[in-house]
Length: 102
Image 1: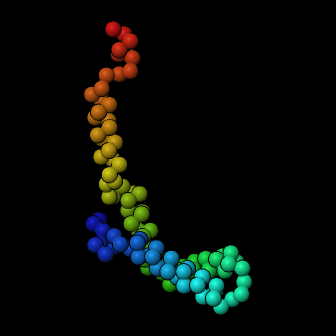
Image 2: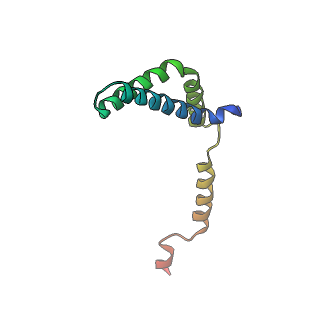
Image 3: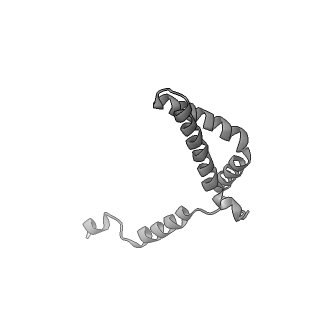
């Protein structure tokens, strides 16, 4: 299953939108409400989480689908090719005890 070209950037856009929501809410809370900054930060984080959970379900579903595809092995990971190169290199090298037997 080949990923759609637009879906490669879904994680980046999703993260930027969530950070933007957090920044806007935090800015509004810091300007409008005369409360401690750390309390405003916690409130902004909770509000940003709720807003992103409700309104950003489609990008979240696309990201989870991509993760599930990679985890199932349908898309080859680059680590597999690294493992094959390392196995080939180790297979050609003499064993650790070979030097002591001579």
